[in-house]
Structures are given as structure tokens and as C-alpha cells.
Amino acid sequence: MASQVVLFAEEDNMFRLMEASLNGVASPRAERALHYFFGESIAEPLSRLTELPGILGLPPGIRGIICDDEANLSDYIREADYLVAESARVTRDLIRLGRVRLRLIHKFGWDCRNIDPDAVREFGVPTVNLMRISTISVAEHFILLILSLARKLTHAHAAALARSGCNDGSKSEGPPRTSFNWGGIQNIQVVSGKTLGMVGLGENGLEIARRAYCLGMKIAYYQRHRLPEKLEASVGAVYHRSLVDLMKGADFVGISVPYNASTKN
Image (cartoon, rainbow, N blue to C red; front, top):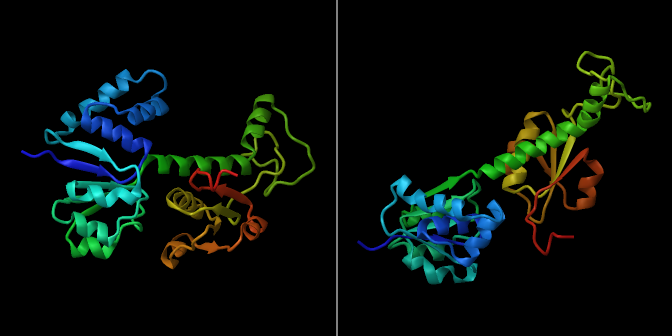
């Protein structure tokens, strides 16, 4: 029986772990990814990864290949049984080239706008997506930070421990001596009605916005390309054409963009 091939459409640390799991051995780049996630000692994590195909009942001989340059995807796609993509564009031409052998396209993440929907229907290639746990974790942590700032949580915690208050002269949104305000902390705020300005409203940014919107916050955002109206409407998002305009009207600001040379500074 011929081996089945999982083609990962781009370079990614998580994909390198998957590659090591499928192939039963860590390439040099997979070793770097293992060190990134697990620290200096990687023998045990690698052992567990290589056990996964058997635990999951994957077919014998299945192997993983990573295309480290999107421009070369067309060179690999004809040999792929499964295509896993995160941000790489899965175009009609690419799907057409792989249509004979390709059994499944898997989007790593929930946003499938980089995959041509008409082409997958035309060529009958099933397509699925997976919400990344890291996206959920980032969104929850961001909301935690907003609430912590609004409620001056670290200051309030210290005041509660010391049984003392803060007398900086500012006023809270609500009586400072209400029962929930243990230390009489001034200038605590509610987030409902406040504006969250997001620099970048991709997968992570939208998950943050969804949670903030449920708390009654207004959502504004800035990025290079405006979102489709349907996505904007799902969180009541207002698009700003400049970062300066966004900052002027925001009570809280979040940055959710890829870390690379163009965004570093």
C-alpha cells in the first residue's frame, strides 16, 4: 500500500511538531520547534509525539512534508493526500493541480478566507477547520487584562490585603464604598460602553472582540484591509482608516498582528 502524504503548506513551529510525529523522527527544524515549546530536554516530548500516530490509529506509512515556501506549493500538491494550511493561500489553481489525489483540506484555525470556496466545491475536496486552543487562550487572557485594568485589580488586591484604600482624588463609576469595593479604591471602571480599539482583527483579534462585545463594549479596529461587512456586523465593529483615529477614540487598545519585520517597530 502506497504511503499517504500530509502536506503542510507553510513553515510553522506547530507544523514541525506534527511533522516529527508523523515521520517518527525530528528534522533539524523540528528539533528547534521542540526546544521552543519544551525547553532544553526534548527526548520525552519527542517520544510522546512519535507514539501519537499509533494511538490515533493512523494508517502505517503516513508521512508529513512541509513546504517552507508558499511559491513552491504547486510542486508538492500533486503528491499530497491531505493539505494542512494556516495562512497560505489555497487557490483554485492549486486545488485543481491536487484534485486527483487530494482527499482533504484542513485549515489550521477557523478563518477559511484564504481557501477558494468555489474551487473546493467544484473539485469535490472536503474542507474542515479547527479552532486553535492558543486563539482561545489569547482572547481569554486579553479580556482578563482589560478587566484587571478597569478594576485596578493589582492595586485593589494590595489594598484589600493591607485593609487600606487609595485616596488619589479621582472618582469611581459607582460609589467607592459599595460592598464589592473592598479597599475603597477610587477610579474603578465598568467596561460596558467603553471602546476597545483593535489593531488587527484577524483570528485572534476577532475572538477578543467577540468576548468584549458580549461585555457591552464598543469595537473599533484598524488594519490594512477592511473586513467583510458580515464579520464587522457580528461584533459591531467600526473600521478606522488610520491608527491615529483609532487611538483617539479608544479606551483600551489591543494589538493583534503577526510578529515580523513589518510589524516589529
